Amino acid sequence: MKPILDIENISFGYSKDIKIFDNFSLSLKEGEIKAIVGPSGVGKSTLFELILGHRKPSSGSIRSLSFSQVFQDPYSSFHPTYTVREQIAEVTSMEGVEKLLDQMGLEESHLDTLPHKLSGGQLQRCSILRALLMKPKLLLLDEPTSALDNLNQLDIMKLIVQHAQGMGVLLITHDHDLATWCADEIVTLG
Image (cartoon, rainbow, N blue to C red; front, side, top):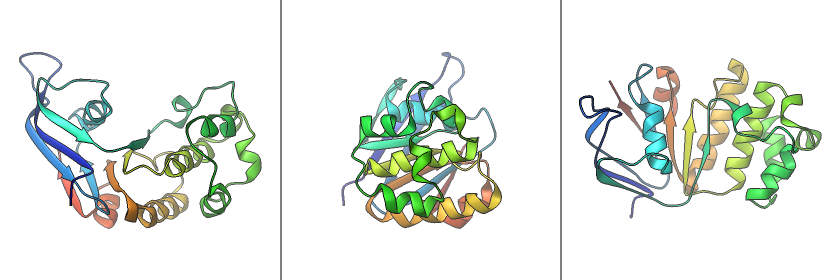
């Protein structure tokens, strides 16, 4: 089976003297969940920037199928002057939204709200909702549950794991217990 994400021998550093990645490789297949763990500053978020194409490796290659992403700060993921619904509809159809709203503990009215009127947890669930509605082959999650309380964290991760059957999931987390619970493989940086 062809990988959904294939990172081959990439190297990258913010300066010539300090490399964050040196011949780093990673492969992710459909149905797999891999967690990237490590302390702050070791390059976890930089890896996502490289996958997203926001930064270029100095050597090696990165290939991926269609992806969507969920970032740690939901307020930076939504424009403040458009409703959540308008922003989701901009990038995907709303097919299946009712079922996901229910599974995520969200109300239909949350979609017709401006982002800053929602709590951080509600907006993060909207961010995950948008990412899942896009039906990506690759789902990139950067600390996706950090804005949620413990009960919601578990429920949302169960939902993501359930939806992972048709995609590959790459999860950045500081929470080693979460990584152990949901990931097929843990990649430790640093």
